[in-house]
Amino acid sequence: MTRERYPSTVEVTERARLLTLRYPGVCRLAEVGRSRAGRPLMMLTVGQGPRNILVVAGPHANEAAVGGATALHLAERLADGRDRGIDDGSAWHFLLCIDPDGAALNEPWLQGPYTLRRHYEHFFRPCAAEQPEWLPHDGAVQSAALPETRALVGLLDALRPALQCSLHAIDVGGSFVQLTRDVPGVPERIGKSAAELDIPLESGSSDAFQWPSPGPGVYVMPPASDPAAGDGAHSTWTHAERYDGVTAIVEVPMWACDRSADTTPHPDADHALRTAGAALRRDLPTVARVLARVDPELVGTDGPILRTVRELVSIGPQLSAEWDPALRPPDAAPLPEMTTARVTSIEVYAQRIPLRAAAMLRRVAAVPAVTELVDAWCAAYEAAYRPRWVPVEDQVEQQARSVLAVYEELCA
Image 1 (cartoon, rainbow, N blue to C red):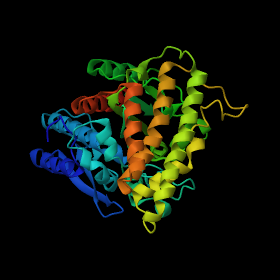
Image 2: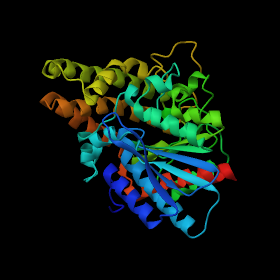
Image 3: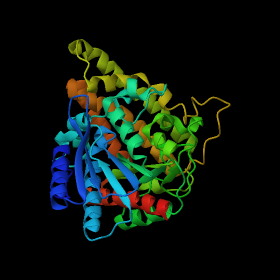
C-alpha cells in the first residue's frame, strides 16, 4: 500500500502482522472478539507499561479506511521509537477496525478515483442500533449490545485506559476533536498542525452544537446528565470515565470546506437555518416516496443497507429540531452565536443526510428515480461547498498528530 490511497481492513491487518515480525519484542497482535458476521476484531499492541492508551479505528463503517491507516502510522512510529529505547511507560493498543462488517461494504471505492460521486456510489453507514460505540440506554451492555460493543467495553474494563481515542472522519468540512474532559494545550497543537497541512479547523461543528469550545476545532462534552451531551451520553466514550480516563473523538475531513473555519458572524443565520431545515424535511420524504415505490421489489429483504435507509427517512423532522427556528420551541435554550462556520456545518449536515439515504437506496434498488436523486444531490453538494480533496497522507498525519497532541498534553 502507498500513502496515496486508503488501505482495506485486510491490508491493515496484514501490515500489522508484518510489524510484529519486524519488532517482535515490542509489538503483539491478538484477536479480541468477533463481529456479527464472524470477522475477527484484531488489536495491535505496542510496548508495555502501567499506563494504557486505547485507539479505536472504524467506529463508523464509512470512516474505517482513514482510521486504519492512522492506527498503522502511529503504531509504526511508536514501535520504531520503542525499538530505539524511547519508552515513557505507556502501552498503546490499536483496535484496527471495530466494525469490519460495515467497513467491507464501503471498500469498493478505496481504489479510487477519490471523487465525491464515487464515494457515495459505494457508501454505507449502519443504522444507530448497529454502530458499535453506542451503548444501550438501560446500561445492560453485556446482554443487549452488539458483540463488537461487548468486545470494546471488555477492553475498556480490562485496560482502564488513561486515554481512549476514537478515530472518525467526515466527508466535507474541517478537522476537529471532541473531548470528554478539557485538556489544555490541545487547541493550539491541532491548530498549528491543521495550518501546516492546509486543512481547515471545523470551528462550529453541528456534532457538538451546544458543547463548550476552549479553542477553534476543540469541543468538550457536557456531563452525561446534560441533554446537550446528546448521543455521547450513551456511548463507549463515557465508559472510560469510570476509570478516570479521557476520550478524544478525532475527526478529519476527506474533502475540505474552508467555510468550516470562518468564525465571522453569519449575515442572515435565521434564513439560512430555516432553509436548511426545510430542505431536510423536503428531501428525506422524497427518498421515502421512492422507497415506497420500489419497496415491493424488496419484500423479504432486511439487510443492513435497507435498515439504515428506512431509519433515515423516518426521523427527518427531529434531525433539525435543535437548530431550525421553524421547529424550536419558544422556551428552548438560546442558540449559540451563529457564525459562518456553525451555519455551514448545519447546511452541510442537512444536505449530507438525504444524500446518504438516496445513495444507500441506490445500492439495493438502482432504479432511474433514485439514480437521478444521487446524481443531482452530489452535484448540488459540490456546487454549494466547493470541497477540495485532502490527500490521504495529510488526513492520516492530521489525525495522528491530534491523537499525540491529546496524549502528550494530558500526560504533561
